[in-house]
Length: 177
Image (cartoon, rainbow, N blue to C red):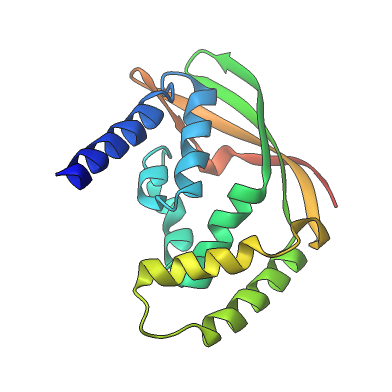
């Protein structure tokens, strides 16, 4: 009974966190999108796009446990600042200043996690495997990995009382390595 109550409380807390995202604003929509990717909810994140199929390559990529951990850790360890929300009628933009791994930094992390994956017992469930790989990634000295700073301008369009990200119109504004 205690476990059931605990589960219900945790579920309520998660729903409360997600319900706090203001999907009626462009900035809230982009924050919600990033949060779902961080949690590995790629299907839910895709719902915030005008073209959900844009996420298909990411969905395919994260079928591999190593790639799933890399994607989640990139967002968890990355730095994201949402700013410059600009609304013009039924279109809007939101700038996201982010610091993430370069392809070279990602390759180093991928190599480390692939070696760790080979050493992990095959008897683990998928969830346990992901947790073990995440522990390995947590032990990495992230500041030693090659990173870059980018500004991505997300373009959004209004659909009824909600905003959706137009992935085809989203652009990189600046990159510093």
